[in-house]
Length: 277
Image (cartoon, rainbow, N blue to C red; front, side, top):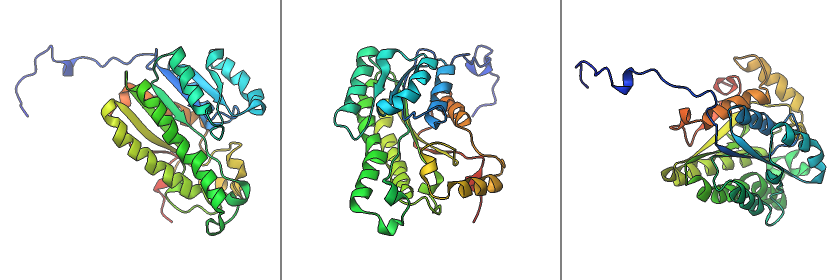
């Protein structure tokens, strides 16, 4: 280090320039919106507010009734509002093929899907069926690998960011979270390996870990209301997390401001994760 005077023209002395639309011109694919209360929708709204162009998916014709208006609100081109059930052969590939046809590139991918059969979700991990375990891992974890592989050539052109949604139950035992705990642990590890493998191509991979949020998917967890009350009482912020709060923070991490952040579990839980037992 030197204590010599700095040249007045040195960039270090110039004001920082923050764009008003930091994701303008960027292309974002959001997978996992179920309705207006979804964390994925909160993220999509924030990405759009930051200037990104969006493609979103819906699970099936039933969920399309709830998400069609959301696609319009997000100004999604009709050609980029696409079906995606990861259990259906070819549907993931079809989504990325359409993204390539429409945009030729991709900058942001949000993976926000998880599933476990009800009987396995509500039972003990000790008793989980082989079929239930395999289905849970295929939908909740392997689908991220599939999407990352398809996103890789599209993101390698200009760099990109992949996000996946986890929960503290993947790190510590949360009563009644069941088989989703091991699934989230596997998801987080997969994401870290993806961050290592894709990093040289300018692709970041991060894990978003919100606190419990009142979503349709979360309502399937046994005694979920008790988990909400316990979290609100113990979190330093003394509040529950809202999907839009998660959305803003995630969109900020998609910007170039955060281009050094990858392979991280980013807690958005009001500080709940710092508390001891």
